[in-house]
Image (cartoon, rainbow, N blue to C red; front, side, top):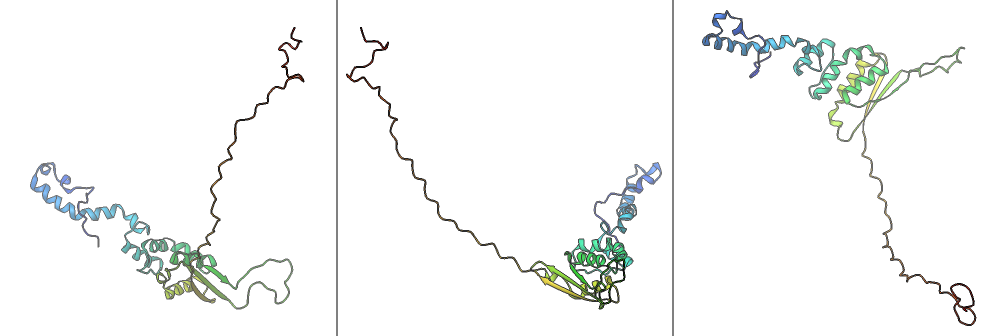
Length: 231
């Protein structure tokens, strides 16, 4: 049952549906306003009835009801988003029931992890009859579903319910086995140690550059500016 919602406005106030004589009547308007509070959730439900059959939009108690329509078993301990996703994809899962994809999708929705599936079936194509004993796959049908989860998330998965989920999604004549592994945290990479850096040595002090002095002639006299003999 849907209850009253505080301050929920109604799209069809009853007071304005009365004859015009009562539109300004305080008693009539207050009386019909009290009825509007009761009828507002009913009208809102009717106006949004399409959302009540949408698992992604409907209230959670309606999602449980929709799950019965499509033959899906929900777990109250699941997160709300996971319950809605399973009901929303129920028709698609039924279309792929009995296949590897159907099993993988069902387990992924329940656990939140894409499983590793090992099966004994196989197919091959050839233009000539294959030799005896070389048919693809294995004669004994077997299905192994391996789920690897993060550390600390093992308690969130019920092995019994997961086994029933796989049993409903796989072919009825195939023997199955479910394995749940908890991943071990990876060790941190070794820390690299580098030699301490030595402080840079200051550059050696250098004096001003030497200026080459002009050289005189053999008598110690400087050559004349004009290059003559000085007369």
